[in-house]
Image (cartoon, rainbow, N blue to C red; front, side, top):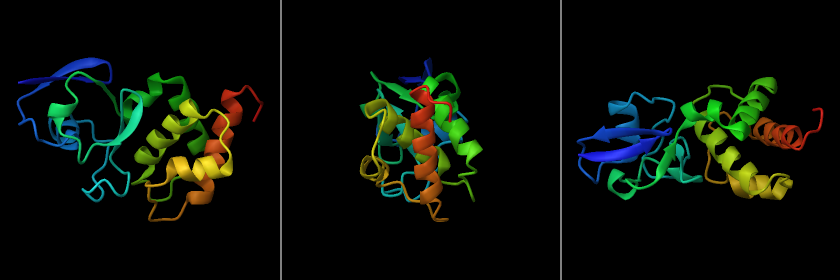
Length: 156
């Protein structure tokens, strides 16, 4: 039995230690906001926060996270930066098909916590590895810039 700290709650699983975190989140804990994309940590659809850092849940074995805090997209409503980013996403109609958006938001939150006023280049670098098959990259960038302004207290 492995105990994990998921979204600030202790959760137990009997899955083998090498089981990817993604499958425990989705199949055992019904946290389906984290998506399966490529299974090789290349697309970013499965991005979660592990002790505040964006990681790919598809390749992260549960045995490696037992002592750390995992936050999923479902937790972002409880995170100040997460709420602001999600609202910017809604206000700018970022999502098209929406499949990648949870991973995009998780990476954007990590970026804004590390770099509150990112330049265009810093946004590109911080979001690299998050693929959007619909090509909403301009709206993603605009939403990150909007969230940054709002977090800084600008009336955007």
